[in-house]
Length: 86
Image 1 (cartoon, rainbow, N blue to C red):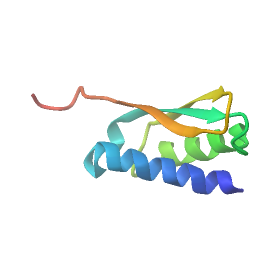
Image 2 (tube, rainbow, N blue to C red):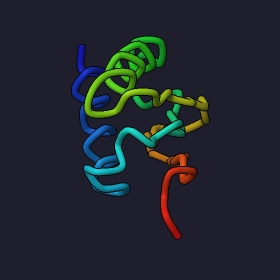
Image 3 (tube, one colour):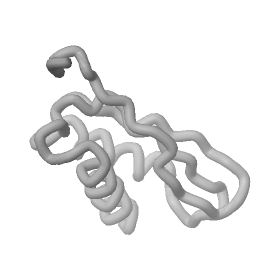
Image 4 (cartoon, rainbow, N blue to C red):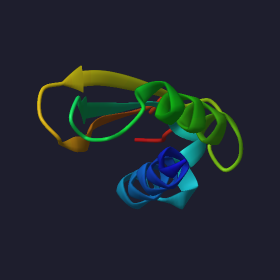
């Protein structure tokens, strides 16, 4: 199941974007997955749900949109800023 390795890479990209100290604040990871990307979306969603719900994350969830084409990209990251000091 190559969806697990894809999910792990998405988590790495997320960590790189928000930093290791903010992973618990990740709420959503938005993805576009092309219908020709050779990815089983249900399997990818399952893997991401498991990875984002546990440490070092904690409460993140994937939001996956199926699109035409063969692209697979992270489109957005929603991060809870409520606990951040200004």
